[in-house]
Every structure is written in structure tokens, then in C-alpha cells.
Image (cartoon, rainbow, N blue to C red; front, side, top):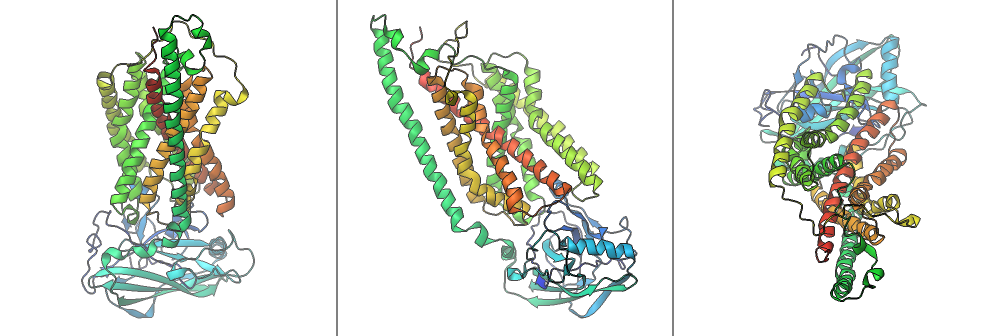
Length: 611
């Protein structure tokens, strides 16, 4: 593209770093697929997106700003990526900068000049006052730059040339100045590109009727940094490996020991005493023995009663188990591979893991439904296959409508929607069917240690703090306490342009959360049964799931106090994504809680003589 130039501006002063991006993408041209270049080989600088710094999801096509006059977006060269890259809202277009490997351009090269009319001045001024910034890619390395600056509102220089954070969401005072010169400084090691730095210079005032000439220079320098380490400059070690991060893991670990201790205490001491008394009473002829009985043994004839709404219950537990398996698989994959280096790699991994784990969801819901003696297999199967996708599809449809209304790049193209739905219909649903059939035939029969009475017993009135709703809300407090510091790191990397790479931490936190959830729900269930309330199935599921209520409440706190997001678009996207995330977390923790309690309840009733 000769006239297809990118007239973009750079970050204030020497800003901007580039990210080491991985080789997840399909080969396109030149040697970008192998990341090796010959001397003087042409190199393309790809423009990705542009938008307000404080609203990470509100992104537009780079040429949405009137950078060059003869732009026709239909003719511009695109670089198409995989499914994950498109779902993340990336669309790389050729910026039109003419560059070649190891060829310096010391004299400023003019890309184009544009005549400023009142509309262009207003557009540029709005972008500069809202701290618009843009992203380029060269050889899969990210580079960032600011469109312009407002006098008296210059952000501090970031470390290592990284983009510093603008202070306020919008800058009202001062004059808006447009950067018209971009200085690219590229480091190479033999035939590979290692670093790209972009410095935006020459702030120019915007006057109606004036002209803006966009220029750039390119300089190449050799470096000794190896190709495999080129991404490390994008990782914020100080942030992610702060001692608070280590301390929070240690803290959570102590909580796990404490909770496991409590559960072991219940199992050992209380149960042993109860069993001894129960056996003594059963052997003797003392007719008054039953009068003395209290607590969980009283409900042995009802404790294995099928819970209300068994179809929905089995589907929720199946879906939650599937999401727990998905999380474990995705975290392990991310730990072994450097997923953070590739555009869309994390999204692609999660979708692949979701499809593969559909078998797990089908198997768990099928075998559970078999144990409950159910007959409506089609409904269980459909519920299991569609509970989570229905929420995701519904939320994404709303977000997509907003994004299309704003003409944002966050809008998912129709073709991508069709591909995603086909994956669900042709891969996830058949695997769920296969899992349900496996569960139905090999899930094992109900091995309940006690018979279920024909007539349900009355649940006695209890004090307010022993009622299921209160226990359910209390059940989420400790699991949330074990993960909320990690939530801060995850939220910050997702909403604040950091690369999340500490998947080892995440794996530990996932395991800690699983153990804490199981232990807490066992304690809640024991408390419930001791109050002669046998409705433990839904209580244990909801008690685990209530963690997500606290996480969603924390996300509101994070939005209000930790971010500078503004506007309808970003607010809808923030709470839409957080809604999906907390729903998935709730299903996962609920399923873990129920499965742990199920094993516990079967264990404590095994020694009871219920004849």
C-alpha cells in the first residue's frame, strides 16, 4: 500500500514497548512465520486497534481516525488470525510504512499529508483528550503509541520505554497536540527481530485549514538478547512476583491446613463418639435409647432422598465438574506453553478445553441422574449441554449488539459466530451425548448405605443462623478469602494491559480453592444434618457456588475504585465479562462442594444400622 500509510502517533516521549508475540499464527508472507529475515527483505508493520487508554474493550479499527485522506478500508491488506485472535477483537491491517530488514532510514520519510477541516480537527481533538492510543505489531511483537498529548497533562515516562498510564480519564484543560512523527528503533540478533521501540515526536497543534504531514524514521541496532528471551521485557515481574503475591499463597495454604484439620476432627472425634453410642444403643434392649438420639443420625431415612428439580441439579453439577476440569486443563496447558505470547492463544486454549471436557459434563450428570433413578434422559442431556453456553451466548449477543452500535472492533464477525456455534453443535453436544451414555451405562448404581423412608420426615424449626440461606451465604466467605488476592492480579492483567504469566501461582490457587470449597461445604452440611435437616444436596451446591457472589461484589469494588473506565460501552463489557466469569466460577465451586459432600455423607452413614 503506497498511500495506505499509517499516520499514527506515538506514546508520549520515548514510550512504548513491544511485546514478544508467539508463533501461534499461520504463515502469511515474507518470513514472518519463521521469524527469520534476509538482508533488505521488506517488513510489514501491522496496525491493530485504537481506542481510549482507560477503556480496554472500546477499540476501533486503526483507520477509524482520519489519518490519511485516500484510505479505502476495503482495499487495505489484512492479516487474518485464528479463532481466538478474532474473538479477542484483533484485526491487523497493513500500516503502509515502507521498511526493510536492517535498512536504516535516518531522514524522515513522509507518509502523507492531510488537510484539516473542522470535522477532522474535532475527531483528532476528541481522541487526544480521551487518551486514545493504538497498537502495532511487527514480527508478532506488540508496540504501543499515544495519538497525541494535552499540554500540562503529560503522563510520566514509563520504565523501559513502556507506555505510561495517563492520569485522568479525559483531559479537559490545555491544548490538544497531535504527534506527527514516529521514530522506530529496532534491535536485531543475526537474522531475527528482537525488540521494537516506538517513540512519538513532534507534537503539532490542530488548526482548521492547516496541514498535517505524517513522517517516520527507522533505525536498526544489533543486540545480544536471544530470540527466546525477547518477550521478557513485556512481563511485569515487579507486579506479579511482589511479596504480597507470595504471602497471599502462604496465607491461603495455612487456611487449607486449618480447614482440613476441622474436617478431620469432625470425622474422627464426633463420628467415633456417635458411632460408639449408636452401636451400644442398638445392641442393648434399652427402649429409651431412641429418645436420646439427636442430630444427623435421626435423618438417616431421608438423607439420600432425591433432591427437588433433579434434572436441573444433575445438569448443574455436570456442567460445574466440566468447568473445573476445563480450568485445570487450561492452567496446565498455559503452565507448559508460553500462551501469553500469542494473540488469542488463551481464548483458543479455553475453547478447545471446553469442547474436550464436554464428555466429563455428560458423564457426571448422566451417572448422577442414574443414581437418582431418573428416566428423562433427553432433558438431562440438553440441560447439561446448554446451561453454560446459553448464558455465554445470551451475554455475548447483548455485548455484540452494543459493539456493532459503536462500530467497535470488539464486535464479533458473523462468520466467527457461525464457526463457534458449529463447534458447539458438532463437537460439544455429541461429546456430551457420549458422556451421558457412558454415565448411564457405567456410572454405577446408587450405593446408598441407608434406605429412604416412604414418607419424608418433617424438618424441625431452627434458629435463624442454622437455616440453609444463611449457611449458603456463609459458605462462600472462606473460599473467596482464599482467592481474592489472586483475583486482583487476574483482573489487573485482563483490564490493565498486563501479560498474565504466573500460571504456577494460578494452579496453586485453583487447588487451594478446590480444597477450601470442599472443606467448607462439608462443615456446612454437617451443621445442617446435625440440625435434623436432610436437604443437604442443594445446600451444599449453593454453599460452594455462593463464592461467586462475593467475587462479583469484589468486581464492582474493583471497577469503581481500581479502574478509570467510563462510558456505557466499557461498563456493559466489563460487567458482561464479569457476569460470565462469576457464573462459571459459581458452577465450578458448587459442583466441587456437592461432590465432596456426597462422599462425606455416604461415609458417615455407612456404619449406621438402619434396620
